[in-house]
Image 1: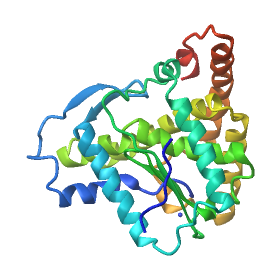
Image 2: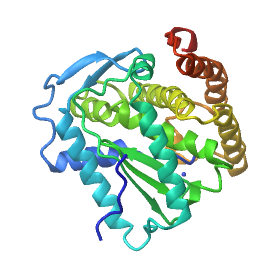
Image 3: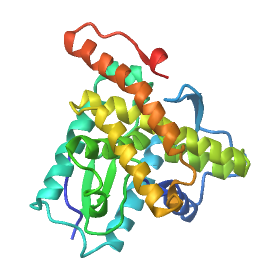
Length: 278
């Protein structure tokens, strides 16, 4: 994994597609309204997925959005020598390596061929409880999320979820839907919740294959649920996410399957288990 420093809310997940979408509009958009998507096939959630941006444009949008975020946080980006940066980069690196395992890609139905990823990780000194991964593998973590994750396994839960969004081309899909006007507001929320659930599922397998304990993903989201209850209402940016109860129930269902898949892979006789885990 290539990590380098930039040249010089329910927490987690900024609405990164919104930022990417604004940058896309500034570049002229996808073309005429109703233009057919570049590709249509089965996505990681085994549902139809329309991707209107070609791979290079998807990468460029992520790059532009990332540089904008770093520019806006100039002076608050932690140096590479900071132990928090080293920890985040180490965990992210392990997750990225796990994403390159071909049997795992087939298990979680990832389509990476032809897409470009130039992985970078930066940590921003901020009280925001947040993290995200833009298209092309540009990761930003705000220090406010670090105390919420009690250990490396829980931080891996955060990072694997965010990385899953980029690997599943979720921003590309959301931009395509927004540009073509194919869905109503209610349907958009349903799509967003589907993407969040997919990122949970993909992320759980990624962190497990990276050597982290998937049981800690359940504990992390239980902690988040308690935090949300204490706040009195869910943070705004998670309004389109699955409920805490649904997310935790899904994690409990998927965790044994992720463990089983990793055990089979380590033993050298890997079998497909996703039909059981969905």
